[in-house]
Image (cartoon, rainbow over all chains, first blue to last red; front, side, top):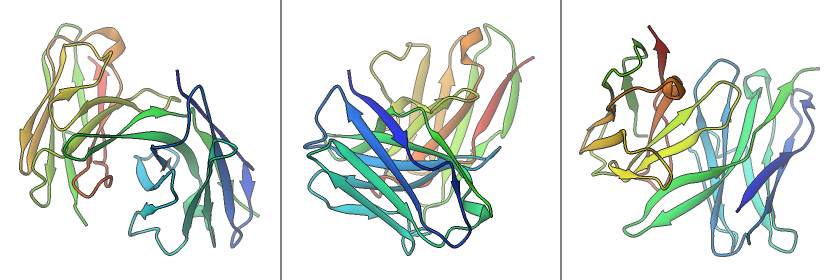
Length: 121
Length: 107
């Protein structure tokens, strides 16, 4: 059974780069899509982007200029970098597996537990 | 960008009730729509994909319908564990925008 676990600093200073890693266990990262979603305190979900194991990416237009998602198949991990952070980037960050079915229906079917990142000096 | 509008934003209901949540999109997306359930402090859980396909392991009291711009999530008989927040998400452009959420509370 595939499990995902986010890791990274819980506190990031304004203007710096937020960096998180998601470790996939119980299955291979290969031939799959993997995504990041976030949730500010008390608010709704915001999709950030996804990556295919080969390295191709797709980002939310609203975050595209600041986001980089990468993959390390040798470690069964994928990562998120968000640059020039502000207090508005404070959120719980979730990684998830993306399943793509016939006719290209995408959905996030396995999620990590989430990690809280606070942006503050 | 495709805009998502869920209604209502909150809803009070009783165990055993039939409940319907609506999601409307700003442009036609065929049936490229997902529904998720989220409980406090927990990660979202996929309930429905492709507007009406039930994710494996999800109880059959959950159902989804709709196509184009108007979609619904129906819970046929509310159980105590169903009180949560529900989100729709368009998957027309692979993955994308979520609705603002519908909080389902116990009456």
